[in-house]
Image (tube, rainbow, N blue to C red; front, side, top):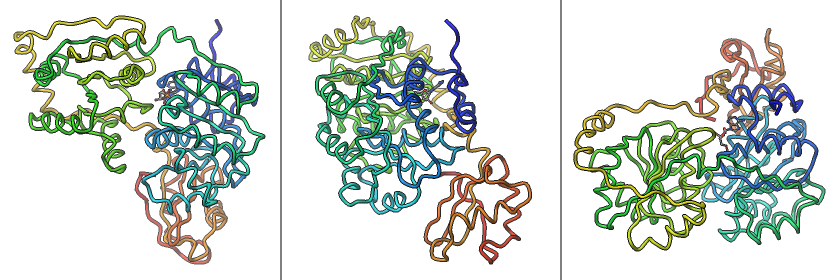
Length: 483
Ligand code: AMP
């Protein structure tokens, strides 16, 4: 078989540059199917797991086909959860960065007004959750008249969460002339019906996973009494001594209790569950991604679609009661070409769930003997060493992209009638700067943020100390690196 390269797709240089900087060497199997089909304007049903590179499979062609000049949104991505909306936004943003694509995420429990303001400006691709998308449609703050692409991500999860009616309500507000891509790990009847109703001669892409999540991940289980779980967890963590680990529980209460207990025992650990504020959940996920702490105790909110590299171990402290959750949970380890390990604790009462899971994944999960006292004793010292050393911090995705970019803050905005053309005009008059070097411009009421690309930020920063913008010298400073 000849090797497939991204260069085969004739993508624009801005997109190719982003792909290169994200470190994607060649398209994954799902990308090899979806990218060309979408570039040929076909509706596509993608049956694939997270971790297969599915987000980039639609993000790359959509970013390529999006017209920068157009002000109204051209693509809408619907995701079941806020976390996924944010992650999809970031993935698309990273791919469309050199094309200066604006990609707001709209989701609940976050101020409506800020999203409304963002949507009022130039917007290319919107990612959001069903409820909040409908709110924006009802209040006419999301203009769908130019939507050419609709992406329904994790459709089976939307079905589980009862979002199908809302999806249909959203589709009713979109132009009929559009391309629809639906992604789903499984194809239950409700999803097949949705496809039949709203898609136009879709191509079915089902990447035969020779190497499915479940195969890539080394799985084991322990038989344990409920009251002995904590002791077993401590022993297992000593023996496994993972670099980073997610411990799943079935309820918020259990997450609270277990995290409290582990923290009391000096584990570097935090928790995440649906009862926490959105802001805290995001912060915890980000800190975990970057490796600020080693153990994350979580409910299933952390299991779906969330992309964290290099988690070496997943522990099901409580075995999940539905088999799909099992696959999603263990899929947090063994991401794209990595291997990983998943350990499940099962009590006698869990037999029926365990049976269903084994049937679902098509194999038996090997039963292991609990670690012996001697093994635990021998490995304790190494464990303590890691426990007291600071974790190695990982780079956030897109860090390399960020390095070439400096974001500047200009102390003038809409109130002083600042417009993008004023900024672009001034910057292009600086020697050595062209429109290619100017990234995203965000004009707020009294301030403006502008990204300077291609390592030219320092030059622009220096020049703007003595160059007037719109007739006056403005206070210009370097903004936080965060977006
Ligand atoms: P997803 O299946 O969309 O959750 O993607 C899983 C991970 O694969 C993400 O971290 C992507 O950044 C990464 N990824 C996507 N495409 C590629 C590629 N062609 N090569 C390597 N990694 C990729």
